[in-house]
Image: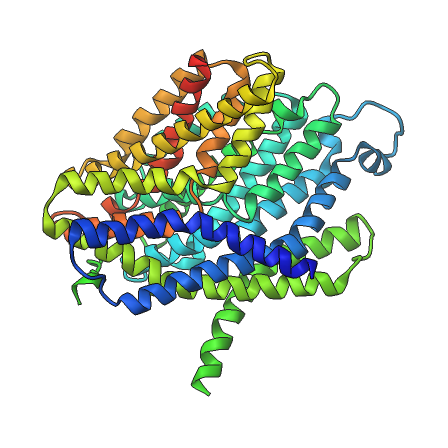
Length: 268
Length: 243
């Protein structure tokens, strides 16, 4: 019974999320464009699938993954647990005593990004538009590696207590330098990958890790230091996707990635 | 037979996407924390729901959101009304962000931080008005981002100049914004783009770039999401300075 209530409340909140979008799409279609939506029935069924799919997805995450992931993050960051793995008991914890936390941060960053639905959407679109030359898998794996590195570094920042903006500014400088050397066609996609990595699956898991760390390390304020991991997770994929493009170009022997004209579906 | 194949294929696909998380969780639970799973049945039900949900969602994207965004972009390009296209771009950004659950929770946390930091009086009413103000700020900034991004696609401006300008904006604002707001501002850039907004906005960008002659969907079509994650940082820091 409680499970059904939970499903219904998640469906309701997804509906609230999707209503403004549907109103805007159909409002502009019928009042500004003044033309019926092509394939209206299919589009409507598709939106219904998106609604149900996202709700089931969230219900499943709430049931299975989030509770385990969150309690895991809490236990791994617990000073008792970290001390237990050390030979010298009772000393003040140093940044390099947190070995499992770093590994967990990298692993969970990678794994949640691979499962992120909005990244799948962008990968499908990029694959479509590039005529298959930008592989769905390759793009998603390079984004996931970027998130893994980003979160690990973000965790190090919380543990060491260094200011957030130093890291972000250095990251920006790297990104700006890279944009002048990568193939032009990847730049927009690389920047977009940074924005999409952090949503449904990644944010709750990563926030739990950040808050867990910030609340157990002496001298950290969870409200101030718990934030910032998301920013790392959106910056580093930009760097890794551009590296991926450079590497693919280099492997292909300096050949440019062919760009095919995308056929607009509305024309049919 | 074909029907069964059509059902199974997306499920195995989603299974592959989910496998890393499952492996990470099992590894840490059993080998590092050395604990059993408390309620295996509940976990399996949850995983089943995630699989079903992911498959349905991706099917729905291809049937509904992608074609809807693409056909609207095409219709706007043919109609040639820049004004309405820009109104559409702004409302899409604003409308999808204001109701975003992740943003609502970040805004509430931010209000708590602000109250503890003594920036606003620590009572419920001022916290609520602070959180609402923050949500409005972020929603306006996302609307503004999509609007600028659409102008960029139409004009064919190279994306990196706008991004670099945005980065400079973020860095300059960081120097002046109150310390308490910086972490929240940086994170608010990441939470604005929800799972439903991303496919739609991407379809809009790619659709526009495909319909306008001289634009390349790959070079010009992407980048809207990037703006939408950048402008909130600047606007939120500005909000923190004004309040």
